[in-house]
Image 1 (cartoon, chains in turn purple, orange):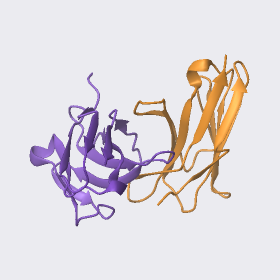
Image 2: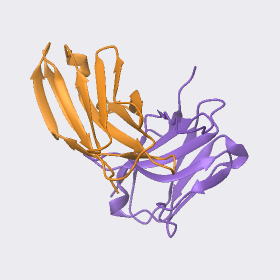
Image 3: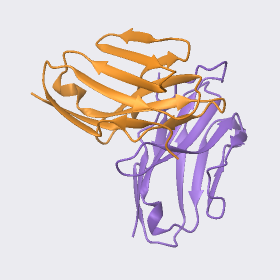
Length: 116
Length: 110
Protein backbone atom coordinates (compact mmCIF):
# COMPACT_ATOMS: atom_id res chain seq x y z
CA UNK A 1 0.00 0.00 0.00
CA UNK A 2 1.46 3.36 -1.00
CA UNK A 3 1.88 5.90 1.74
CA UNK A 4 1.11 9.59 1.78
CA UNK A 5 2.92 11.29 -1.07
CA UNK A 6 4.11 14.87 -0.91
CA UNK A 7 5.90 17.07 -3.38
CA UNK A 8 8.21 18.77 -3.65
CA UNK A 9 10.44 17.43 -0.89
CA UNK A 10 12.44 20.64 -0.74
CA UNK A 11 11.70 24.18 -1.85
CA UNK A 12 13.80 27.31 -1.63
CA UNK A 13 12.22 30.63 -2.51
CA UNK A 14 12.75 34.31 -1.89
CA UNK A 15 10.45 36.17 0.45
CA UNK A 16 7.28 37.60 -1.09
CA UNK A 17 7.22 34.81 -3.68
CA UNK A 18 4.32 32.32 -3.82
CA UNK A 19 4.78 28.63 -3.13
CA UNK A 20 2.54 25.58 -3.30
CA UNK A 21 2.74 22.11 -1.79
CA UNK A 22 0.93 19.05 -3.01
CA UNK A 23 -0.29 16.01 -1.12
CA UNK A 24 -1.80 12.72 -2.22
CA UNK A 25 -3.23 10.81 0.75
CA UNK A 26 -3.53 7.08 1.19
CA UNK A 27 -6.26 5.69 -1.04
CA UNK A 28 -9.59 5.58 0.73
CA UNK A 29 -8.63 7.95 3.53
CA UNK A 30 -11.35 10.52 3.90
CA UNK A 31 -9.55 12.79 6.35
CA UNK A 32 -6.57 14.87 5.32
CA UNK A 33 -4.46 17.14 7.50
CA UNK A 34 -1.81 19.77 6.88
CA UNK A 35 0.67 20.44 9.67
CA UNK A 36 3.53 22.88 10.08
CA UNK A 37 6.63 21.75 11.97
CA UNK A 38 9.26 24.19 13.10
CA UNK A 39 12.75 23.02 13.92
CA UNK A 40 12.87 21.26 17.27
CA UNK A 41 9.12 21.38 17.75
CA UNK A 42 6.19 19.08 17.24
CA UNK A 43 3.83 19.52 14.32
CA UNK A 44 1.00 22.04 14.60
CA UNK A 45 -2.25 21.60 12.76
CA UNK A 46 -3.03 24.08 10.00
CA UNK A 47 -6.15 22.58 8.48
CA UNK A 48 -8.20 19.39 8.49
CA UNK A 49 -10.42 18.13 5.68
CA UNK A 50 -13.23 15.62 5.81
CA UNK A 51 -13.56 14.66 2.16
CA UNK A 52 -13.57 18.01 0.35
CA UNK A 53 -14.81 20.05 3.30
CA UNK A 54 -12.43 22.01 5.50
CA UNK A 55 -13.82 21.23 8.95
CA UNK A 56 -11.08 22.87 11.01
CA UNK A 57 -9.03 25.74 9.62
CA UNK A 58 -8.89 27.83 12.76
CA UNK A 59 -5.06 27.72 12.85
CA UNK A 60 -4.57 28.59 9.19
CA UNK A 61 -3.26 32.17 8.69
CA UNK A 62 -5.83 33.06 6.09
CA UNK A 63 -4.21 36.32 5.04
CA UNK A 64 -1.48 34.43 3.23
CA UNK A 65 -2.28 30.72 3.41
CA UNK A 66 -4.90 28.88 1.43
CA UNK A 67 -5.70 25.25 0.86
CA UNK A 68 -7.99 23.19 -1.28
CA UNK A 69 -8.97 19.59 -1.66
CA UNK A 70 -10.93 19.32 -4.85
CA UNK A 71 -12.81 16.05 -5.31
CA UNK A 72 -11.85 15.02 -1.82
CA UNK A 73 -8.57 13.34 -2.76
CA UNK A 74 -5.42 15.39 -3.51
CA UNK A 75 -4.80 18.59 -1.66
CA UNK A 76 -2.75 21.72 -2.26
CA UNK A 77 -1.49 24.16 0.33
CA UNK A 78 -0.42 27.59 -0.89
CA UNK A 79 1.42 30.50 0.67
CA UNK A 80 1.28 33.89 -1.01
CA UNK A 81 3.36 35.85 -0.30
CA UNK A 82 5.87 33.84 1.69
CA UNK A 83 7.66 35.41 4.64
CA UNK A 84 10.94 34.52 6.30
CA UNK A 85 9.07 33.03 9.26
CA UNK A 86 7.34 30.52 7.01
CA UNK A 87 10.53 28.48 6.76
CA UNK A 88 9.55 25.11 8.19
CA UNK A 89 8.56 21.59 7.25
CA UNK A 90 5.01 21.21 5.96
CA UNK A 91 3.57 17.80 6.68
CA UNK A 92 0.53 16.17 5.19
CA UNK A 93 -1.26 13.32 6.92
CA UNK A 94 -4.33 11.24 6.28
CA UNK A 95 -6.54 8.87 8.22
CA UNK A 96 -9.55 6.69 7.60
CA UNK A 97 -12.97 8.14 8.24
CA UNK A 98 -13.25 9.51 11.74
CA UNK A 99 -15.16 7.19 14.01
CA UNK A 100 -15.28 7.49 17.73
CA UNK A 101 -11.98 8.53 19.16
CA UNK A 102 -9.73 6.36 17.04
CA UNK A 103 -7.50 8.70 15.10
CA UNK A 104 -4.18 7.17 14.02
CA UNK A 105 -2.70 9.35 11.32
CA UNK A 106 -0.34 8.44 8.51
CA UNK A 107 2.20 11.10 7.64
CA UNK A 108 4.00 11.94 4.45
CA UNK A 109 7.72 12.80 4.37
CA UNK A 110 7.02 16.53 4.35
CA UNK A 111 8.16 19.48 2.29
CA UNK A 112 11.02 21.49 3.73
CA UNK A 113 10.53 25.13 2.83
CA UNK A 114 13.32 27.68 3.07
CA UNK A 115 12.44 31.32 2.56
CA UNK A 116 15.40 33.59 1.87
CA UNK B 1 -0.17 25.74 20.62
CA UNK B 2 1.47 22.67 22.13
CA UNK B 3 -0.75 20.55 24.35
CA UNK B 4 1.87 18.19 25.65
CA UNK B 5 5.26 18.64 27.18
CA UNK B 6 7.77 15.85 26.93
CA UNK B 7 10.45 15.22 29.48
CA UNK B 8 13.36 14.98 29.08
CA UNK B 9 13.95 17.07 25.99
CA UNK B 10 16.96 14.94 25.15
CA UNK B 11 18.13 11.51 26.27
CA UNK B 12 21.30 9.59 25.50
CA UNK B 13 21.68 5.93 26.46
CA UNK B 14 23.71 2.86 25.53
CA UNK B 15 22.36 0.10 23.36
CA UNK B 16 20.54 -2.49 25.45
CA UNK B 17 19.43 -0.02 28.10
CA UNK B 18 15.85 1.03 28.63
CA UNK B 19 14.61 4.50 27.67
CA UNK B 20 11.76 6.25 29.44
CA UNK B 21 10.07 9.38 28.17
CA UNK B 22 7.30 11.28 29.89
CA UNK B 23 4.51 13.43 28.57
CA UNK B 24 2.23 15.80 30.40
CA UNK B 25 -0.84 17.44 28.93
CA UNK B 26 -3.35 20.05 29.95
CA UNK B 27 -6.91 19.19 28.93
CA UNK B 28 -9.12 16.11 28.99
CA UNK B 29 -8.41 13.71 26.15
CA UNK B 30 -10.04 10.95 24.13
CA UNK B 31 -6.78 9.17 23.56
CA UNK B 32 -3.04 9.73 23.57
CA UNK B 33 -0.66 8.57 20.89
CA UNK B 34 3.09 8.27 20.55
CA UNK B 35 4.91 8.92 17.29
CA UNK B 36 8.51 8.51 16.20
CA UNK B 37 10.34 10.74 13.76
CA UNK B 38 13.72 9.78 12.34
CA UNK B 39 16.02 12.45 11.04
CA UNK B 40 14.73 13.64 7.69
CA UNK B 41 11.73 11.34 7.69
CA UNK B 42 8.05 11.58 8.42
CA UNK B 43 6.26 10.71 11.60
CA UNK B 44 5.38 7.10 12.27
CA UNK B 45 2.60 6.06 14.63
CA UNK B 46 3.82 3.79 17.42
CA UNK B 47 0.99 3.19 19.83
CA UNK B 48 -2.38 4.56 20.92
CA UNK B 49 -3.82 4.42 24.43
CA UNK B 50 -7.41 5.39 25.15
CA UNK B 51 -8.47 7.50 28.08
CA UNK B 52 -10.03 4.49 29.84
CA UNK B 53 -6.86 2.43 29.54
CA UNK B 54 -3.95 2.54 31.97
CA UNK B 55 -1.27 0.51 30.23
CA UNK B 56 -0.57 -0.87 26.80
CA UNK B 57 2.21 -2.93 25.25
CA UNK B 58 3.47 -3.30 21.71
CA UNK B 59 6.66 -5.27 21.19
CA UNK B 60 9.42 -3.47 23.10
CA UNK B 61 7.13 -0.51 23.82
CA UNK B 62 5.17 0.01 27.00
CA UNK B 63 2.90 3.01 27.45
CA UNK B 64 1.14 4.09 30.61
CA UNK B 65 -1.54 6.70 31.06
CA UNK B 66 -2.57 8.46 34.26
CA UNK B 67 -5.54 10.69 33.51
CA UNK B 68 -5.71 11.98 37.07
CA UNK B 69 -2.21 13.41 36.66
CA UNK B 70 -2.66 14.14 32.96
CA UNK B 71 0.53 12.31 32.14
CA UNK B 72 1.82 9.41 30.09
CA UNK B 73 5.10 7.57 29.78
CA UNK B 74 6.71 5.63 26.98
CA UNK B 75 9.21 2.90 27.86
CA UNK B 76 11.43 1.37 25.20
CA UNK B 77 13.12 -1.76 26.49
CA UNK B 78 16.41 -3.18 25.24
CA UNK B 79 17.05 -0.16 23.04
CA UNK B 80 18.83 -0.42 19.71
CA UNK B 81 20.78 2.10 17.67
CA UNK B 82 17.87 2.12 15.23
CA UNK B 83 15.65 3.57 17.98
CA UNK B 84 17.54 6.84 17.68
CA UNK B 85 14.86 9.37 16.79
CA UNK B 86 12.58 12.04 18.18
CA UNK B 87 9.55 10.79 20.04
CA UNK B 88 6.36 12.83 20.29
CA UNK B 89 3.26 12.36 22.34
CA UNK B 90 0.06 13.63 20.80
CA UNK B 91 -3.36 13.99 22.35
CA UNK B 92 -6.75 13.71 20.76
CA UNK B 93 -9.54 15.83 22.14
CA UNK B 94 -13.11 16.26 21.02
CA UNK B 95 -11.82 18.08 17.95
CA UNK B 96 -10.30 14.78 16.76
CA UNK B 97 -7.11 16.54 15.78
CA UNK B 98 -3.72 15.58 17.11
CA UNK B 99 -2.01 18.12 19.36
CA UNK B 100 1.67 17.32 19.62
CA UNK B 101 4.21 17.99 22.31
CA UNK B 102 7.67 19.30 21.60
CA UNK B 103 9.31 15.87 21.63
CA UNK B 104 12.13 13.95 23.25
CA UNK B 105 15.27 13.43 21.19
CA UNK B 106 16.63 9.97 21.93
CA UNK B 107 20.17 8.99 21.04
CA UNK B 108 21.10 5.32 21.43
CA UNK B 109 24.83 4.77 21.39
CA UNK B 110 26.00 1.48 19.82
